[in-house]
View 1 (cartoon, rainbow, N blue to C red):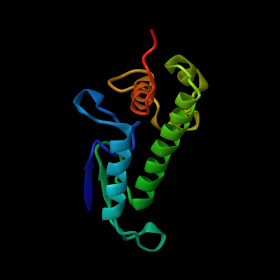
View 2 (view 1 turned 90 degrees about the vertical axis):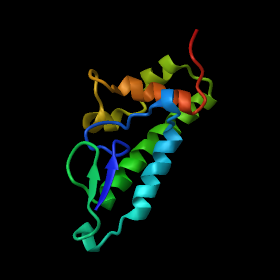
View 3 (view 1 turned 30 degrees about the horizontal axis):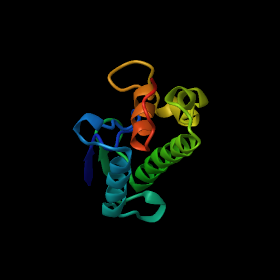
View 4 (view 1 turned 135 degrees about the horizontal axis):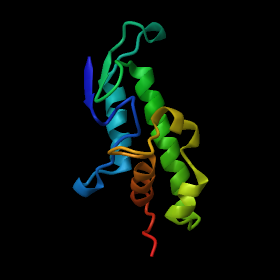
Length: 129
């Protein structure tokens, strides 16, 4: 078994604690490390069990799917930043739309907007004035 803490959760987007030096790239790297530690078996049954910070017990494939989701959203936002889009424009484009049903939140301690803002800043987006 591998216990991941809150870097991998099944109940929301990962929390990027930028105030304490956290980054979206750090989240992706941590997820890659978790994947490196896990051992899959045939059809993922019997392989390493992954205990997330919140949510159901998982396996390697669940972590791979989560890592891929985070990477896809990061890459989409990074492309928008390279085109000069503002944070408001990025949010309006809804780069996480197909994942919001599983991981999104409009209220609580960590919302989809907060996640998108952290990713935006993490890939070089500038604050709006």
